[in-house]
Length: 326
Ligand SMILES: Nc1ncnc2c1ncn2[C@@H]1O[C@H](COP(=O)(O)OP(=O)(O)OP(=O)(O)O)[C@@H](O)[C@H]1O
Ligand SMILES: N[C@@H](CCO)C(=O)O
Image (tube, rainbow, N blue to C red):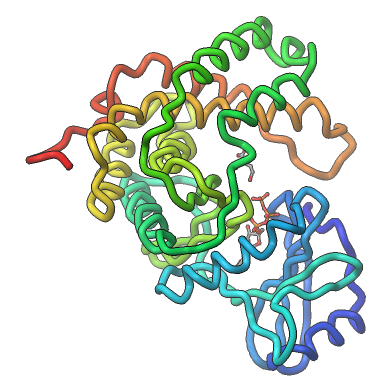
């Protein structure tokens, strides 16, 4: 479980006294997530999420993350809103870690996404892109094309221990993506990790987005490519074109995709699948088996990458533009 840091009741009560949220009633660590320590906190003023930022998160990035959530929430996007203390900075310190308190979002993530869930996610992603267009802070994506080779090199010779021939397969794909990666597509703030566990649904409706700790500036359509990888494959590894179509249509209905973005989508999806293959591979090799963090299988993203390599156009994702294109 991901509670790296224990918090003493007295320290939490003192921390909460900076906010107008009433008396501490109870708190418990949340098992899900791997990056930070999260606690569910109940006070007589309501229910909140307390996040303690652990070492994988760069402290210099925290103003970007907190500012982005404030910016999006102010524009009506359903995401955790940092609670403002009565005085001082939104970002406090607790148990020796930077810490912030957030509003609690109702809902649950879905383990069995349907095409309608995918359509809703496409719409919500485009809404996020539209609403963050005037956000002023900038955070380059350290896990975009320039970041993949250092990750790969960090895996050394161990890739082939995970799967025979993996090292050569990644090297070939990486070289091709580095030479063909687009530089002229519309950019902006992307979520960069909008997987099913970061989207909540309540009574069948999308109720909120969480976990903005990979958010950064990058190609907008790359975020859609990440979602196609994360939402539209079945457990047997097959791509579901009904889900793919629904997701792209959902996105396009809110923020129309240009022909260039649509043409680039298969290449962007190759990059997205390689990104998650590499981060999972890196963790697979470097995180000890004795750690309480559950490591995710890199081979799932190798299979997804192979699928995207065989895609000729967005029609293979089920999408056909109806009427005039953007
Ligand atoms: N604002 C919120 N409202 C309700 N639940 C939340 C909220 N924020 C976080 N959670 C809960 O805490 C869990 C972990 O949060 P989150 O995914 O942000 O952690 P993380 O350590 O950054 O995770 P990851 O490994 O996915 O990057 C979520 O799965 C969810 O159950
Ligand atoms: N969504 C990532 C984990 C980081 O949140 C993955 O599935 O590899």
